[in-house]
Length: 265
Image 1 (cartoon, one colour):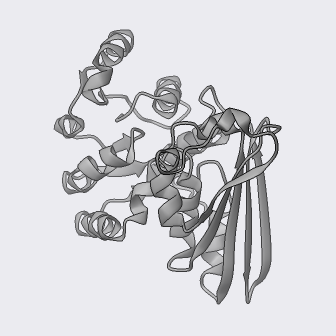
Image 2 (spheres, rainbow, N blue to C red):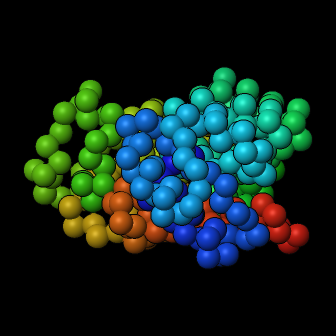
């Protein structure tokens, strides 16, 4: 397990309780700044910890779960696949970098391994994959979150904003998936997953900060020769306001599906 934040800890609990399938937790890792937390969690779990993600490959895992950051995924993704492990990538925003995505998926093909991308805080990616087989004209995503759920995003370095002063629903960002993933890396894995599902088609992204929103909401509209698809997800946040509870559940379901004989597509 690479990453001991909200998602990583939820997955660890699910693995140990048997809810994620027939897996055994071998080791945990995160960045050196979290060594004291790693040490405490390691002692509680009875598994070793590392501050170098690549050290996890020494345990010859069946699957390495990345739940840390885009940088962590870039550092260990290709080498994980080359080592013979499957890779479950939570920081899917890194795949909006075309060169990295090409390298990662090329490594997966050569190693006959899988890169698993959980659906996260949304669903319907199977339907969008189906629609993509025809002529998909338009896909848009509107994400609405409480202002505090957006705090700390790199976007605000370039565009200083007093989030506490927002009194009504306000569009903070409008643009491409690549820019959304770069400027809101902890918030827009939804946009990245959506973009991967529909391929090269441009996904128009709008991010709204709404102080009256008690939940995270994602609205997807897709139009094509198949007709029209409208998907709306109103998600309860987890203990981390940037992460929807559904994203935690999706991570567990994706891990379980990796080793299940029945697959949904």
